[in-house]
Image (cartoon, rainbow, N blue to C red; front, side, top):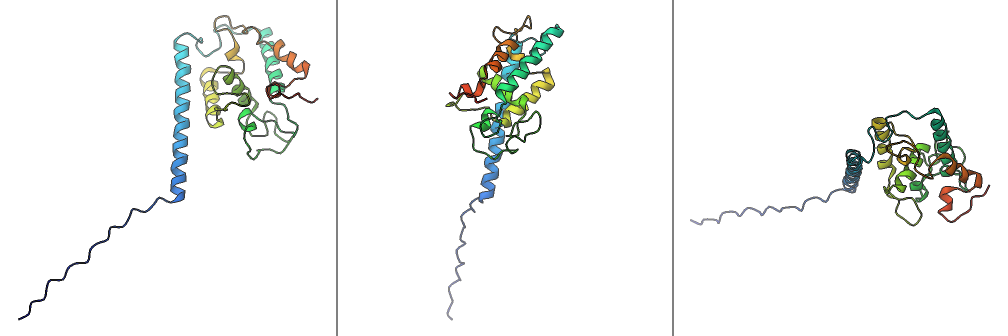
Length: 213
């Protein structure tokens, strides 16, 4: 009697793990970028809270307890109006842009000279543009050409909203004396109105260009 050898089972091939699709990789990159922005926002918020706890700003931030006089309120509004004229003015192409979008070639939200009141052509608001410049002068992000404009609108705008909701922030708060509530020297309306009178655009000055009237 002939005994046939037992059949040897065919080896099971272990396939390589499927490579993640391009879409999955892009989704993961977006998720990580969003998380980075959230962490940056948390860090800046923590730094501001630490500043408050050290007495760097009165509480609420940064408006003093005493309500500003009507004369100071008028000066404040005049200061803001002058800053809008300087920082939110149209460029030669008819666009008004925040520093972040001015440094990038991206599609504008609105055509030249057609942005709604209170908005720039890039889609950012006047308040956001003023906030960006004020932050840069206090070492948060950068504003001047040749530097990295780090204050991404995805981080800048929620931070502004947080300060407005929590501390009733308005443009100029960072430039007031914490105790007296008066303007830091050289930060009142006359300083900014002088630039308007001189016909010099603040942002263009630092780009080494003269503003054409």
